[in-house]
Image (cartoon, rainbow, N blue to C red; front, side, top):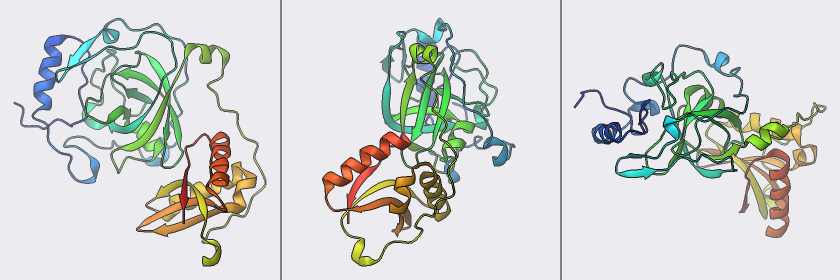
Length: 294
């Protein structure tokens, strides 16, 4: 076996659908090692482009493309069989997203295209190649649109492997993985232009609360929009939310607990009221809030 460990998430090969290669990948995966510090695998990690440049990498633009022949055939990896989807139908899934970077940059993907860690692409075990998905980080509400052109990941519990640029845009490079929701953009939605989010009008600056309310009013039910390790991230997200949803701005508060900065809206007198607010927030911001009791 090679002395260089392979990442637990990887599997990619331009002929991954062939049984012989699939068996070889399974053997190699058995020699894989745990990630080293910083969430990176040996010989993997960020490239030379600065974060400010990656911030400007645009989403993939969905378009209708013919399916590739090879990577959409049934295949097997690590003793498990996969049957890629070929029908143009909706698909939604929640789970862990990982990412891959420098170690695979320039190497062939399952589609045969070279992997570009700076492009907005992704690997998925069964979605059509090529296809387009919207990926939403459930922790911070950020979204990207990526083009699926590769297979994987084949680690239990991980549902999608994003490019380095896409993971940077979502804000989980350092962590290595994040809870996400993915949603396929169908050909019908592309034809109708329904995949595009309507740009919200730029509102006047809104003052939002940056400190918790008095202890007497902190009880009750709250709607949590996100949890952050850095307060700057929580404050930045609160500003975005407050500027996009005017009625919500006066209700926003950051609670710091157990090294986490939680952005919450409230308080509400009952769980029913909080749940109704959570649904309204979800519709307005396209994120998945949770109701908590204090």
